[in-house]
Every structure is written in C-alpha cells, then in structure tokens.
Length: 123
Ligand code: HEM
Image (cartoon, rainbow, N blue to C red):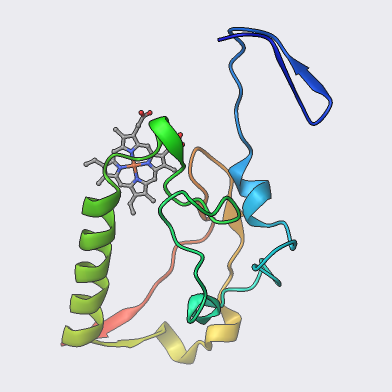
C-alpha cells in the first residue's frame, strides 16, 4: 500500500511480491536441519505447525492469502492415507527397493515427482 524497505530492498508501492517458499523450506537454518531429507518424524515433539505461524514450514502459505481449504486438505489427506495404509498391503514392483526410487522433482506451480511412483496394492 506504500513504499517500504525490507532487509535493505526497496519495494515500491503496488509491487507484486512473490515469496520463494521452496527456498525458505530448504534453508537449513532453524528447526529444520537436513531439510532435503524426508524425515516426517522431525516434527514429533516440535511446536512447528503447518498453519502459517512458522515461516520455515509453509505448506498452506500464511496470512490473508493463505489457503482457505487448509482444514479440508488436512482432513482429506489424513483420511485418504489412513485408508490406503489400513486397507492394502503395498509393495514396489519387480523386487524394487525403496532406495531405488527416483525422487527427482519436476518444477512447476507445485513440485511433483518427475517419475511417477508405481506401487502395487494387495487388498
Ligand atoms: C493438502 C492440500 C492443500 C495444500 C497443500 C494447499 C496449499 C495452498 C497454498 C500453498 C496456497 C497459496 C497460499 C499463499 O499464497 O500464501 C493455497 C491457496 C489456495 N487454496 Fe489451497 N491447498 C490445499 C487444499 C485446498 C483445498 C481442498 C481447497 C478448496 C477446497 C483450496 C483452495 C485454495 C484457494 C481458493 C487458494 C487461493 C487463496 C487466495 O489466493 O486468497 N486449497 N493453497
């Protein structure tokens, strides 16, 4: 709404500012050490949450333009993952090991896996 200076950068009134959340999430400063590693249990006993108060971890953004579907998203993802794990036994195809998975990322509006995951469910 008015010109301002943030960390020495002059920002003109009416500028469109895009925050690089990808980089913030991979910055090894703060409570997220080893950010490139998939360690979901890092959050056990931590008070970092997903709701936009902890800027080192912002899956739903923050503030006025944060995701209005956050509660629905969290509920649906929890239910879906719980159902998939509860109802099926999962295996990788052809004796493939978890360490063989190609976790390369495909850059886009959201970052997805470049190579699709193939997993074989048994009811
Ligand atoms: C796990 C699921 C979801 C994730 C990770 C997610 C993530 C996000 C993120 C990162 C943003 C941008 C926030 C920002 O700019 O600061 C956003 C915006 C938005 N999301 Fe979600 N979202 C999810 C589910 C949903 C659902 C279920 C809905 C609707 C039913 C929804 C509707 C929206 C809308 C309308 C915006 C734009 C808000 C605005 O610009 O004012 N999202 N979401």
